[in-house]
Image 1 (cartoon, rainbow, N blue to C red):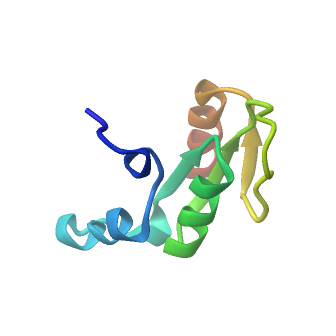
Image 2: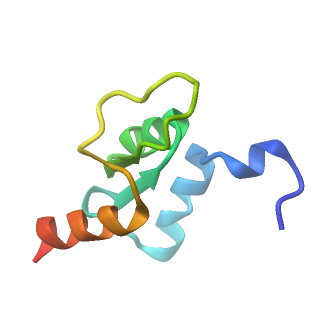
Length: 82
């Protein structure tokens, strides 16, 4: 359950938790529909996929792929990893 507005956006602190679970961020993907998601993924060294939902806000830059749905993102990851 989210209790604050900040809980909805990724932060370096959340991604640094990957150390706790021994997740290799350079082999991981960040999928997001906001520029903040893509920025956080890029800062963490993840490959990033932007789901373009046509929000009226700043558009992300530097993403590795762009799709319209989560299903398309999953298909993209499968193509990149299989």
